[in-house]
Image 1 (cartoon, rainbow, N blue to C red):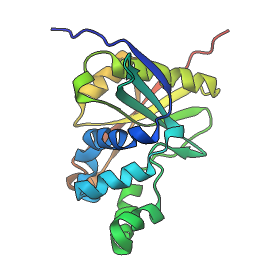
Image 2: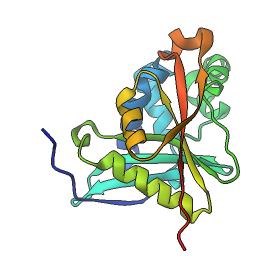
Image 3: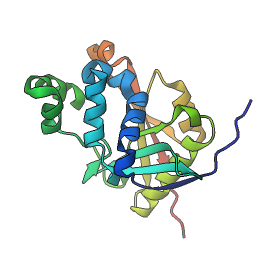
Image 4: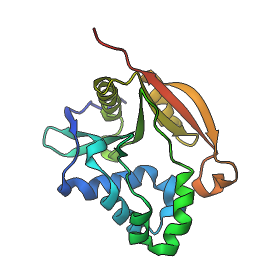
Length: 203
């Protein structure tokens, strides 16, 4: 049975009062992939509350202003998940940062001219299947157009076929694949498919 679509508004950024909720949703979406590196969960929540940058987020809210989901992106000037070595050391200690940092670098994706690299998309579990993810993908494409980009790029892991199906419905096509090699047991997935959506210029 198809759920009713939510009346929502998408805007730039989130406030300090929403920071804990955004961090919790981020962990809900990516904890399975990052858990072996970023646990304990309480420390991971505190880390992401600290480092998530609202300047690189588009946020969907319902008519009452309740946060429904977030699409993050990455540019040459920053990213939604903007933490570095100092942030890791502050939350996990120096030794914890020394081994976590190189492992997290394996998941990093660079930026290219003309391409808006997504830095995660996540929707509150109570709002899934109600058009939030689709609306955020359309909004991120519009944002890419405003920045003068001709493509939006994201990565989807092989254990998330539902997300890949959504991306394909929204016009994303596979443009490459990367493997985690011997680290697949650590991150919980074997391959990540790079997907791209063309940004059509408006006359």
